[in-house]
Image 1 (cartoon, one colour):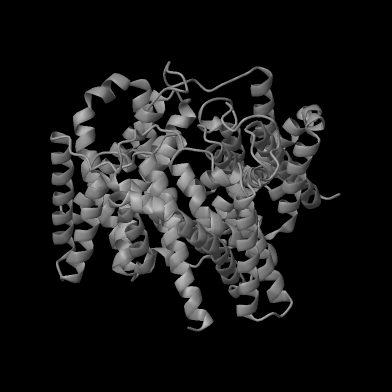
Image 2 (cartoon, one colour; image 1 turned 135 degrees about the vertical axis):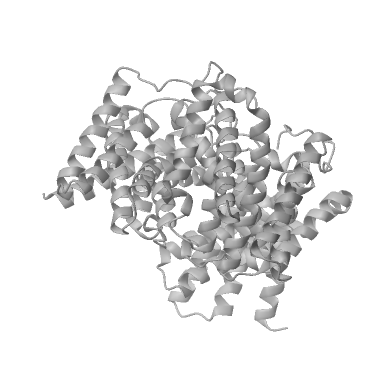
Length: 211
Length: 211
Length: 211
């Protein structure tokens, strides 16, 4: 299997893991079947849609490639009919979620660079591709996006996107910089989960305070 | 009155019904006049704006055609100054809301097909046109979108968009497939309201659970 | 200093004031450092990004010009490490926020007119540029947008955008209509804060009612 096919496989596995995170959250809020599918699809494709709108790459790829919709629906149905299985799959899902996070950040940054845009946009859209769907999930489920509150998640995506952009400027090969970015993102994410790292809070207030 | 003019009239009547649903919800949350107008306009045009952004059809039609803004403002003002009348109009508003739902799904799918895109995108954007404004209303009013929680609403729009797309592939006339799609959407919506149908919930948790 | 350079300086000062409002709100909700930076940047650039997407002016200027990101990060860091200083700066921040509000409304309307669009779109996008970022801040912080509930804020932006568009139709010079629009918006905003003006509420219900 060459690198390109491996990245395609990883992309779909990451999409599946993202969709599972959406479906589980939607199920925990008691949404109906339609709601679970919508949230699963939103987490899987929302970030990419946001990126494509900002690049003018319309219609967004996530809305026209049936594989993403199929993967999201499979994740949603599995969560609805086999929730115990999904609980048992927690570890592989976390694994592919972390790989998907890095890969989405890399592909987001790549797409911006293919359109010949500057490094700032490439990094911003890399991060947006990786975390945009999760933010939309949290907005739809009526809660403050988890990436703004705790954990090293968006920061790991930021590291991946920055490595991708820096690698391109330094003349690394496409595969080479993708592997380095994936490894860095995955390691950072793994260590932060393992040792419960968080970014510092900006104040002592709790996250549910009134406005 | 030929079909085209009838559909234009239905489009504006549907827009009015959508705007009423936004204005009533905004009023119930105690927003100020500006807020009521914004929410009314958002429900009326939000789905179409989303669709046009995804198609690259900018600027979005809903923001440049003064009739939509005028209809939304009329609905908002009526809700503010004559709320008792609006309550009495509940039945006709529900009627036109159901017709608008089907028509928006059909026109959304049509516009994607005019731009020569595939069936998946046409169906997704048909549904997004029909329910996108309502989702934005619920986001702005800080609640989980009602279409993700209960009722046969988005599903009825999905049926209408799917009929429109399938009809086009089968070579039906434009008017013919629009009528079939409208009738199917309306019947499904009417029956679901009459018999209080809901999609199955994905779990026993209640919709207000914590994250 | 000629008018153009003065407006550029005002634009950055307004961006800074907008970012401060985001950073303070994010800090009060106990977000982590990343969250504070994201919300600050969102308030500063969100409205302009929305405008640019609706105009097809991609990639959005706010995402490619490093000065906006730098100003937003400076505001976020200042809020985190020197929150007492930010409290003492409340008055100048309110001053520049009001000036930024008017200037963003004017530049949003101008950009729509440069793309040769009609008056309705120019006014709508002027208001969206001015208040869109604040609405996104409130959505991310999980509350009903403050502009829909109270205060003369969006209305002041509306006045500025309308003056800009009317002035252009009446043949006023670009600098002339910008000054009039800024002065009107600032005066309206100042008086409304001074005398605690609000738009009328649409009902007696309180803003926290259930749906």
